[in-house]
Length: 71
Image 1 (tube, rainbow, N blue to C red):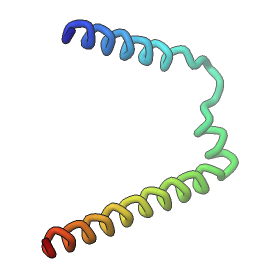
Image 2 (image 1 turned 120 degrees about the horizontal axis):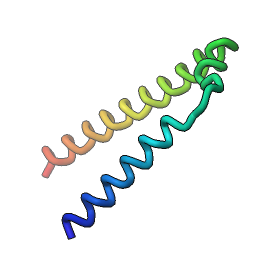
Image 3 (image 1 turned 90 degrees about the vertical axis):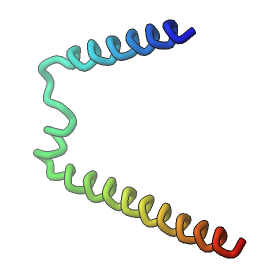
Image 4 (image 1 turned 90 degrees about the horizontal axis):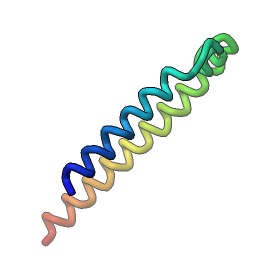
């Protein structure tokens, strides 16, 4: 069973590697967005979401430690 999981993982990693090389000569989406100036909007949105998630995790952690200390 362990060998089958490793084999499937190997095939999946090979498939993703091959698909990365098959992108062609077209400019990437990041290049197009960078030329239009939209990449900064994307970065700002991603950073906002990431900061929000980190703050949420810290808030939940504080609440959990408070509940653990009460018990």
